[in-house]
Length: 326
Image 1 (cartoon, helix red, strand yellow):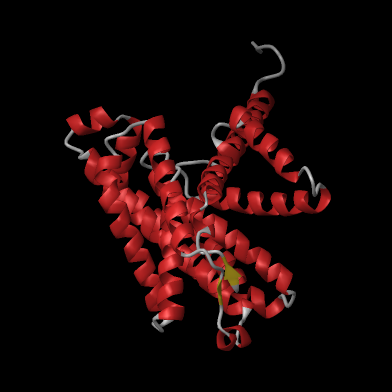
Image 2 (tube, helix red, strand yellow):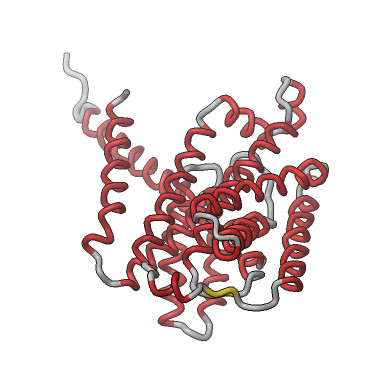
């Protein structure tokens, strides 16, 4: 292991340790809730990034898998009496099965048609769930009495670490290289023996499973909500927005984008109550136009610029100042 990788691994361990210990030192529930929101959006954006960032399939139906995980978890946990973790796992599996059923026909569409098709799919589930479960789902008194923000925080932290870790392992594997080859040029990848459909389905399955798990955590976190809420298109748009703000096709991009998204949105909602959504939308457009690679790419460009400037100064100092001597 190189020194750079060792330092990066050490930094990751320190950050994880701080996050694990956070509830022990921070007693304000508002702060813990803010950390939960960051974990929620980072997880959603990271799971979307596996399909959209590394495989190049811009899906606008990510809310369908998030919503299925939420709905199945809530039904099995509260109505059927199954243990919470088993309910969450089942929700993720149901999201995968649904994604594989619709995956093959959906991947016949390309570009904007694929995005529109996935958006229509999510909207269809939104309407169906709203029609069949129109009433608010609420925690029973026994669960409400034992409600703990800390346990919800640790569940979202586990989902976040699992999502980021899965993305890291996947994209650094042979399958990940195949996914990126499909993203760069699908026809060329096919000519080299890389099955585009196989890698797309793999990315879709992993992405939907992780989104379903996050949906299960969402079902455990909220006291009450309308069952169709997690199927709303805003969850898909937010996932895409965060990935693009941070930088698609990178591990750290959705993390940076998620932190930036949540903190800025909370700040704007407090300072500019009536127009904060408009201001946030304008900022997003500016980021896409002037920072197409997201914050991560902008940081790399800035770092490289300073590095070249430093090298230029060293060359200038090393250059002989006087003429040649005889």
